[in-house]
Each structure stands twice: as structure tokens, then as C-alpha cells.
Image (cartoon, rainbow, N blue to C red; front, side):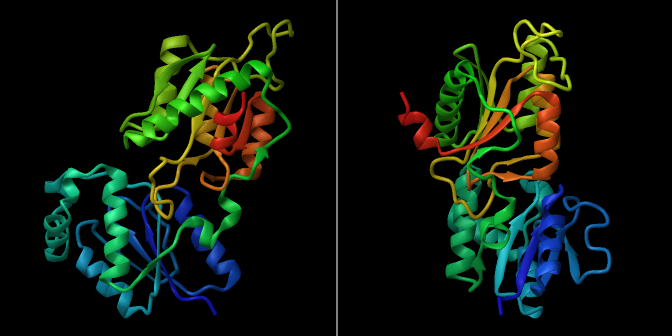
Length: 295
């Protein structure tokens, strides 16, 4: 029997997906729904507690009281200021001891995971440990494949995204026509795609892929690459794409999206494949080392 899972839930679809998988497989779980972060209705008719983000001590006590042994962090978190966080005694001690407020997102999460495991006795698990089917497979998701020109942009975008991630600044980059045209910042991937749309003008998604000389006469060009940071603690904060990412990529006039196979969460994967085909975009899982080694 698997240990009872504590689901620490932020916003978005992913917490509901993890809950559904636990229910389907019969795994025992308990949800901590962070107030102001988790979606309304997430915990209807299931065992849970709503706790503010800064009340770390109460969160840990609640998990222990409910027999939780393993923890998974899922969902988006709007990072609060220290004043909004209002850390409790556990949080104040953690911040003072670790110097976490001076760290970037990856450094902060890595220290938190280490503390929860080494000092608090929980085991932190990732999405791949609980729901491998939510991670990007290797290869095309859908029927469309990148062209030779797309492959050149893929290599440039992947290299730029890895460089950005090594600086703990983001996970995504866009290359078009052999040049990097956009880098993700703290505003996220959707904001990056919106900036690209504003710079290049909106694309015109069609029911079949636009290629030079077709009836639409409007070729999509450029690639969004979204990959894990090289130093990333891969049990938390994995790159994620969903339908909104796909629609925004089409609106930006891109030819497709590449993600890191086994290290990127794809929400609604079947629906993404169908919609990508209709929009004329490729979505491809890659191994970054293969892309950078390929000449």
C-alpha cells in the first residue's frame, strides 16, 4: 500500500488532476488548499484544510494529524511579498536559517524540500512519482512534425531557455528565423507569448497548417521552447503547458512548441494533440542534450 499523500495545492488544473488520479487508483490522500491560491471548488466533498500560505507550522501539524507521509506540491502560486506572506514561527525560523528570501525560486524550493525531508520527516515526491502520464512523452504530440527550418529554431530556442534557466530567471524562450526573439521573465510564459504577438502581429490560426503557397498564404514561423532549469529540483515547479499556452502560441504566429520529455507537465494532453492539429502547430517532446548535440 502506498503512503498517504499530502497534496499541497495552488491554482490551476493540476491539483484536480492529481486528486482524480488518487481517487481512481485508490490512493489515500489529504489536501492542503492554500487560501487565495487554490481554485474555488477544488476540495468539494473531499478531506482537506484551507490554510494560508504563510502558516507553515499549522500546515505541517495538519499533515501529521492526518497521517500524511509523502508530500506533493502542485498548482501555481502567486508569489507574495513578505508582508503578504506573514510567516508564522516555523516560517520565520526557516527564512532566517536558510537565507531563503535572498534566493531565486529554484534555490528557495530546493532548500524547502531539503528541510521538509531532513528535519520534518516527510518525503517530497514529484508529479512523475504520482502521475507519470501527465509528463510529456518523447516525440510529437499530434500528427504535425517540425520542418528543417523549425529544427534550426528549436536548437536556438532550447539553448536560450537552458541559459535562462541556469540563471534561475525562467524556463522558456522563443526563436524565430534563426534569432532569439523573446525570453520568459517573472510574468511567465503567457506574458512572453503576448509580447511576441505584440511585436510581430497576431497569427491567424487555421484548421490546417499554414505553409508557404497554401490557400491562406500565411506561414507560421518560430518555436517556443520550455524546459526545466539545469539545476532545478525536479520534484517541484516543473515546466507546464496547457491549452492556453497552445492557443497563445498560435496567436503569436509560431510554428510550434517543444518541451522537455519526462520533465514537463502537459495538461489535457489528448485535447492538446487534437487542437494542435487543427491549429497547424507541432508540439514535440525532446531531450535537450540530443538537440544541442545534433549538428
